[in-house]
Length: 583
Image (cartoon, rainbow, N blue to C red; front, side, top):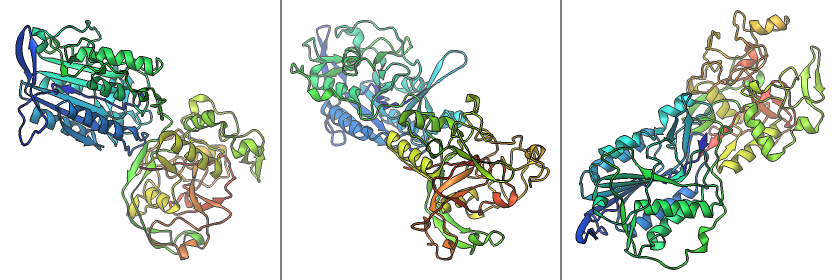
């Protein structure tokens, strides 16, 4: 289940250090305390790594609260003697791993240091068939695992990696805090009550604290972070000895966050399952604060973390470029061929599915144009007929679509419906989604500057290197159709998104399956005066553009340069849409 990990992995791998103040490491001081009656320098140096991802590029919702959380945590740690390294918006798994490895290599080899790692980002847990759950941290380019699990596993950082990170640290103490539901069993669930500072406190330890239990959602405006900062300000110190151990911190966070979240978050804490690294206890030196914690800790989450983000379309980053738009072999409105430059953008990897559209309907109660206006249009064999009761819930034959076909593209939706879907998704995720412009669509469908005839290339389709178009399967049912002769795509009507090979950009079904609405007004003569850079179509009109052909469309109309149009309220059994994501 997708859980938005506002990942507070304050992976304090031995980081509340105390070190001799130097010109390079100002603010760090040794942590000196009495253990068994003897004055002991527990840490000579303290380091923290704070990593946050607020801006996602491949479909995950942005986390605007991360930036303020990172700022607050950095400030709190510096006030407590830490030298802090901050990393914002690592793009890839390699970026995450490099930041962690470099930090450990530079600061984690002195046994008298303590390290702390803090991650504020999305996370996700995959439940395996054999019963175990594997957790992952999501860098900025991580895709939606519900639509592309293989790509997600490749690009996300598995929690199991932290077992190895923890063992690579030679420093005495390390603490990991995760502001999200815990993803994977890295630490032991068995905990003893917090103990007084004693000899074994000095022994090596790797401790973990999470802001929630498995499958729980946490708010982007973090309760956990606020309680953590308050703990460092002394509100958690109850014994009067001036010390706050990692175990005491875990207990305090669990008690306070459960209360302040009204029981929706249950922080977990414990130690790594390793006999050499589970004896000691991380220690903070704090001045006891007997005042009442500020009331601002009690908040209503602005944007709850979304437990199931399967409705968020996966996107592909399309680099900008220049291409020749239109076709001399096409219709009059495809001429003249003209040079167009488009800026880089991100486009939906797949057409929007029935399942994703249903989420929008369920949450908003939106009534589509087909719902309000007596149905959707179907071809009877001689004319287009508006058939009553046919809406987005129906298939291409007008029947109620079974749930096992909810991975097909949604049809019977108008341009108006598609725009409302974009508005809802933008508001829900905090990102901006819209329909593509004609120029963006043609550039992406034709593989950029290559501007291929079809999205799969210039030749005839074959096997999976094709799309769901008018073919031999369709001709067996509709004998009068013009088809791609000799090609059988296996479907008469719509097919599940992603059934055929993607184009060179990694986009599926750009040719065939369903026509796709674009944002532009249609202008038959628009190409004669189209801007050379990022054209957006005429400023007004009566019809909107759609592109790409569909399950019933023959070769001439499936070309990437072919243009079609209808009024914004029009809908039928071959019209759907995909999105552009604006980071």
